[in-house]
Amino acid sequence: MTISMNAERIVILTGAGLSAESGLGTFRDKDGLWTRYDLNEVATPEGFARNPALVHEFYNARRANMLAANPNAAHLALADLQHFAPDRVTLVTQNVDDLLERAGAREVIHMHGELTRALCASCDHRWDAPETMQPTDPCPACGAQSTRPDIVWFGEFPYQMERIEAALTNADLFVAIGTSGNVYPAAGFVQEAIFAGARTLELNLEASANTGLFHESRLGPASLVVPEWVAEIRS
Ligand code: BV8
Image (cartoon, rainbow, N blue to C red):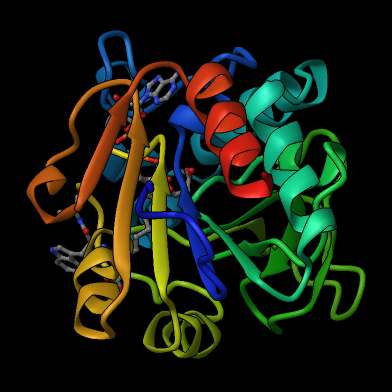
């Protein structure tokens, strides 16, 4: 019997590896985004204050990649699992793409924000982001030219943490998919799940930084290991 069998309250955390086979870059793999961009310049509020045009250029390029990408078998399998057992699955993602939604998933918790959303740094108004954003775009609510991608940068508080913490304290299974386990608080979720008495499973191309905290690790591309796991859990 695998550790997933008859799990009733499953929390799934996904990272960039889930969307890698859809052609969206990861961050810390070879040729990852952080090897081509300085994280401090494009993924911090300080970087945005210094050079908003560069930050918009970075996210405009990722938004264009996202729009040209398609969900892969792993996104589809997770959406299928959620449809099969809607009240048993909490889907949390660190990813800012909308591939899970385009695969049919609902209520995805985007703890690091979304490329499809824009935020006004002056009045906190949020709206659907246009395909490309410029620093001079006026906020539709207050008119200020301080619009930014609705993305959680380093040093900013992730979204919906109360909802995530509540799901973790109640979980009987925690599954991490396609994440290197380097970024907190997401990388600490597995420990919280263990404190709650949950079993923990890692589905990843290679062992993550916190692989030792998982009761089981299945290594391989998400498009293979995720559908296999979902088929098991559904049987
Ligand atoms: C916070 C923006 C509280 C969105 C991202 C000092 C001051 C302040 C905070 C800190 C500090 N020191 C440390 C921190 C905490 C900091 C942090 O953890 N830093 C790290 C680098 C040490 N965290 C924060 O700041 C967070 N906020 O702590 O709030 C607070 C607030 C104020 C002051 C103090 C505390 C905010 C974190 C969010 C930052 N935003 N990005 C974007 O541009 O996308 S994080 C960035 O990393 C992405 O969001 C990404 O999702 C996230 C995690 O990366 P992964 O998804 O894991 O991707 P990665 O490339 O690393 O790994 C890919 C994995 O996939 C690999 O394991 C690979 O093997 C695997 N893979 C590859 N291909 C496949 C595959 N798996 C399966 N199949 C495949 N085909």
